[in-house]
Image 1 (spheres, helix red, strand yellow):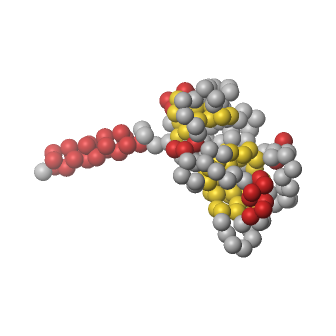
Image 2: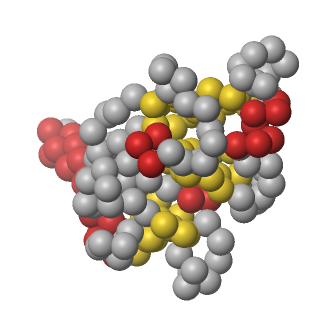
Image 3: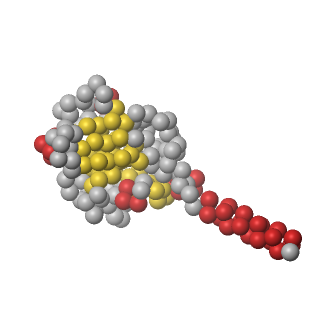
Length: 168
């Protein structure tokens, strides 16, 4: 009986260890405030994204997007925020900082050599990430280390102000 329990516990521990190998670490960058507010549907149409495959960068320190009226209470994360609309029309947001490099000024960029849309690449380490798969690593050092992009909450379509927001 004791041998059966030990064997069961050993198998359970091995299964847990194996499952942990597939876990993505998407909290590699410092936890910096994120708060971007679209007060009206007009603000969303002007500065947000409206269709599948569209994206927009929000980097307050660089004045992106151009003309966006940042308020005192708005923050754009560690490396900036990438707002994306996936093929299903869902809005997604990620920090632009590469989790392998973990530096605010090393930001992922759309990869023009990717075989399909939604792939961003770090210009420093070369890691790629799949925006349409929760920012999961697709190749490079990030894939080996299971480092994914930090994701943020996107809420949109409210009938009363604010119309939409992006938050941690």
